[in-house]
Image (cartoon, rainbow, N blue to C red; front, side, top):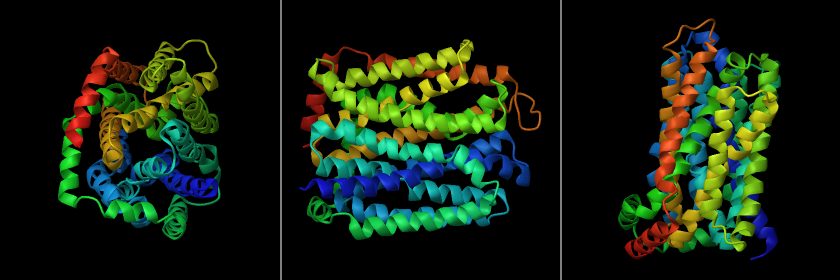
Length: 416
């Protein structure tokens, strides 16, 4: 396959993930305006924003089956239509119920984007290149995290949030059209010849029962859940209430966080195989990055005398390292099940994002609000709880590697 075709595959599906990431974090900019218009509490805002993640999570298993059965081109383009409809419903709504329906539709619509990008990469790139290619995919998506910082804040000075919703819907349809017209078709034809849908659902059940899946997932799903729950909503209130920053400064740091995550995904992806040649497995390298992510959170809770930009950059660089677990999964599951293995991993991550986002909002609501702002002590106690959960999840992950190899062989026999 030519390099040009591989690049086309990469950019088309990475653009889909960019759309997904913009929708994930757009409420960072919309939240103050929506809260002002509708008088939402922290708990209301947490639930509204997290509906994206519950819609995303609920769609993962059927999406994984569809990806393995029909291929990423048709499935991604079709699902993005739901996302466009969702953002238009969201932008046209004047009550909480309509906003919730729109947000749920958005989550369902973009639920395929990350797994489709990883599936397409696994079909068209060599296994040794997947950590780097997946890292670049995450980096393009991370641009969405940059966009919802200062750029979105600037756009909201000249356009209403409802007008922004209309424009996002048009952009989403444009990406869907590009994918359906220009993504290669051969891989989906081959996928369609495989087992029927019922058999493919049985394969998903085997993944859920696989010990290797849960060992790979244990630490990464929790750290990723915490990272994305905070990045997509609660990091801005932390910057305002704990670090006492001005809104413009906070928006700039949100963009820095997005850039840092991009750098971390590409950097760790590029370094993973190099470290493997030196005897450090991708699994171990991923674990080391996640430990550094938890350490960064401890520094933030302890309020060490370090510039906020440095702490936020470290939070972003190490926050995305758990994404290497997708490349690890590709090593332990056969190629015809990669779509389902990836979507099952994404399912667990997004269920946790939903739980953490709602949980943080509920916990903050236990303290009195002063114009939508909460005491610094409230945020710090929430972060301490999240750190404790992450440390607990690391226990199974750090078991000796021979356990992973044993489970890996068992899983390989089970899914054939």
